[in-house]
Length: 368
Ligand SMILES: [Zn+2]
Image (cartoon, rainbow, N blue to C red; front, side, top):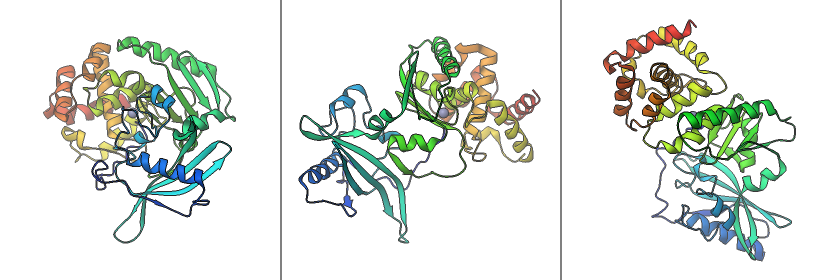
């Protein structure tokens, strides 16, 4: 995950204990039989406790058969879209045999102002005569162009002219990286556009917390999809997460983000670009103690410590011990303690020496 790591810590209710509260804005034709059927469908789904691997009677069969995590919107938010926000249905719109349900996840703060997590769309279509829910992505992607190169189905907007050279370069990367980490190659869908919010709309997301700002390259990987804005057919960072991540569950967050950044950069800039600006910043801030580096988060909106320092550590370990050492790092445990110990094991740098070591390496790499 590259762009969106927004964790809402203070607002997590247990959806398994309390029924999901669903309210409605003005719904046109609310007495119509089909509208009523769709209303009970979305309510039943949001109140169902099996939005997991078990078969969900309110979601269509095909997507449940083909995707372990069949509701693609669920993982768009941390820890989940269904973390307990009250649900407000904004509209239910029918067009031919397709119904679009627009839903807002939000609550009112103590001072009365609304706090909106997201406005998303679901599709309802009939399966064997009964309405079932579908991902908006599955419906919307039919409007985009699709080109398959190797194991990758590339989806892109009509204005984009497909770059076969970059697509081929990506498939070469996939072959090489899967060989280095000794894992099988996984076919997947790759959605690209000039701006990430075009991808969000394709997924059915009209608004999400964190939307806005200047358009910079960004992406996200799930278990079987890569979404990316601004880098065309060659977004290696997220493809690394998709191909390699699941095979190494026992890894620290800085390990996966570090290797991904070492191989593919972050937010459209390569590791050396991030190293140079981090070096300048840390020279001006001698008080920052890198013995506690895992407590650091973002340097600014373009550089995060887990990418740049994680990337530097990955680079140093790769230079010293090659792919085998990076594989070892990927299995060295999830805790901060595990990560510091893995650095000591693979780089022979004690945690007590980490501040001096990292500052020296940043300065050294910045001269290249
Ligand atoms: Zn990442």
